[in-house]
Picture 1: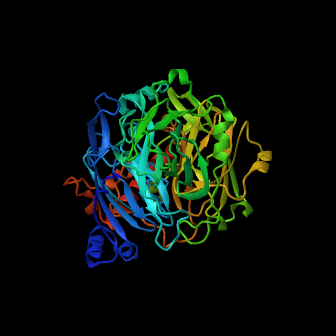
Picture 2 (picture 1 turned 45 degrees about the vertical axis):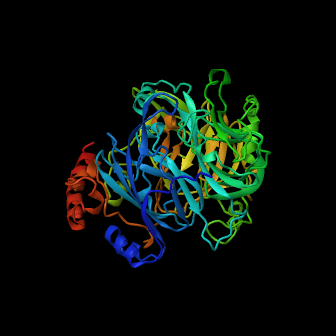
Picture 3 (picture 1 turned 90 degrees about the vertical axis):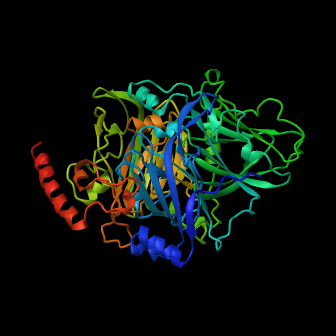
Length: 595
């Protein structure tokens, strides 16, 4: 079997003098002596010319690859990724599903990081603490995900932790998603002008259009079992994934081992990741179709938008034949919801730790806070087309929230996000959820839009406990799954329906809660959750030495004298920073008081 190219990493060490020396050069000493292995990556993010659908266009690649390289690591490894921005606009990479334990500085969204300017580089430094599973990364700014820039993240179990299934004979990553031949810049202008996204020009699989991707699937052997990690990296389209004449044995989703069940197909919504075991149990008389087709759409107008790849046995006797495998009934509105409800946690399996996943008995914990978060379709607010959560369209301040908190800059944000829809006109605001540290929070997403919306929370995995059509009420709690709800970070909410999750807020930081549908997110459908430990936590990571400053704190940023050496250079001494911040705060306080 053709396996993906090895990740572009400079070195991976467990315990050696060389590793320690490199670590001391790149990272603070307190981190270097932590004892867990390090892996180092050098990534250059740039435009490439490609023809995913047969038409030449500009895509975003990493190290000349589209999709980007696989970040293949193991539980508790320390990851150092030096990102060089060769685009013509600012860049951030976010690590979808990686929890960044006590380290939201590395989250790669505008609430925690200043963008990496064009021509600069920045080094991410984080640990995949207490996690396993299948995830992906992508650019989080300016609609850039519509042009690519994404790639896979595999977090393997440590050898001391048993995996609840036999070792597969191979590991295959599939990135599926809707695709447009319009540039991401043109698409975002359309969205800003109030235009809805049109039917996509196609569905890609690993950067290729229909019938064009089979490179990694051309020597699969009869009788062998392969792990397919399937990610919906698209903009806004839910997809149904299936392989002709083959069952999909679901084993994991976004870091949780699941009850192992066979499916003939699986609805994968925007931003979601699944792992299936697929056994090559057919007679190899022909090749077989792999299909990703749109869900919850008017199929008469989407007839060209299906992704198709070819699964080829090494001893295949001929090409794939016959019609594509049928999708679920498009008019059965309960099929997808019932399928989602059937996904349960394997409570007896260990994951990142040896204790079973079911040992955290979330159904027995008292809820401390409840948020019913209601969306709306885009509407005109102060002359702009915007989307909202609880009537608020998130207003991005020029200073990242995390930096404003670190330096006590007043007036940047408010901790007053409402816990339900308010009876008032929609507005733009920088309003945060004031999370209770180690509180147990219930979040109900109510979808008043006409399409499926996915929601994701950085820093956490939440327990999916319920979903149904109609309006959520307190009586809906009687339908909750309080035992084996799967823990994941991205969940779908069907139109005219609700989804409820429970989350234990034990990860201090400021965390992004967003729509994964790129059009909804870009127009303001996001909020940040502030989780502050009232006690001094020596384990929480402090301000990175290579911090980029912007907004009200931009005077702290030393000009970059030499490109691509920014990460190794200090900006301003800590003492000088504090003095400069004091001067800035005097000016800012003056402005706030004069309002």
